[in-house]
Length: 124
Image (cartoon, rainbow, N blue to C red):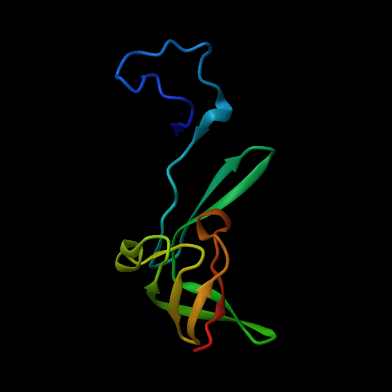
């Protein structure tokens, strides 16, 4: 867990004396960078009695082809607007263009939050 509250240092490097202790609602975590590979999921307890399923690695996507949805094999990450290095490292995020067995598709879900990859075919 990582504290996402205010820093204990000033811009000059001097010490800030906090008014209160760190609270649980200020805790967070590093982003889950979902990679292409054999499916590995992890569950995290979130606020409000919610459970998030994080996809650490995933190799299939639910691709919308017209009116129907097909489960397709992910072959490669073609492009990722979030970070050019993500495409090189095969990291899948929302908005990434992936090569599937059905053709190229754009990811519409957040695999690090939902644990699955949903995508729509990109028309060329």
